[in-house]
Length: 321
Image 1 (tube, rainbow, N blue to C red):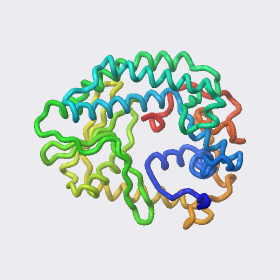
Image 2: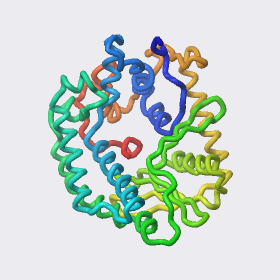
Image 3: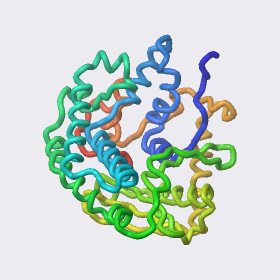
């Protein structure tokens, strides 16, 4: 069976965020990289696919903390005990160290970009910035402790009648003829109340109302749960604060209108919408925000990239898990 010339069409809050961040980056990520995993793919597709797989120190850190949260919930669900703080710290450090070691083997990563980790800092700067290393080093034990002491985990472990419903499960829904991706960090039920938990490892202003509404819409549609029985908790592990939200039917109507407008704008960049065939690369504008440009994984192949060095700062909230 020959490779499909264009990827499947879909929508998600993260796709919308990337589209708003830089149209050219969006093109590289969703279209130029398509089929780049094939060994006989054109060099540009292979390159875009490799660069798409790159991560960063802060992103690997966020993923590691999410992984520990998942394992802690699963361990308590199965055996009645959470991960210990010391073990959590050790595993997070191991994942970060492995990402660094992988990043030293550039040629091996180029051959297996999906199976190995390449940190943007190592690829573009040749080293890990001391400021980022020190910030993450200090955060590891803090976030591990606050995860274990978080309001949601403590409630799940000690309140009566709490049951696990979903944990890091990728789901899809249909919005008209568009497939929408939804992934909850964690959801549990207490009696007739459904509690969605969204872990945040970055700053407290890291918040996505669209994403939270999408969570509520998914649970309402998929499980048939009334909105007044759905609670969304955003756990800010860096500050130790928990923000609680309820969603309403009015907000869901706003969500659908927002997503439909986003979908329509994305599709205006397609030469043939029925095939998800994009217009030429030149139709996708390069961002004028140099800070975003300097943090982009695709700067190696983008002729519109800032000539300044890769920016070794903590990413914007929308880029951090």
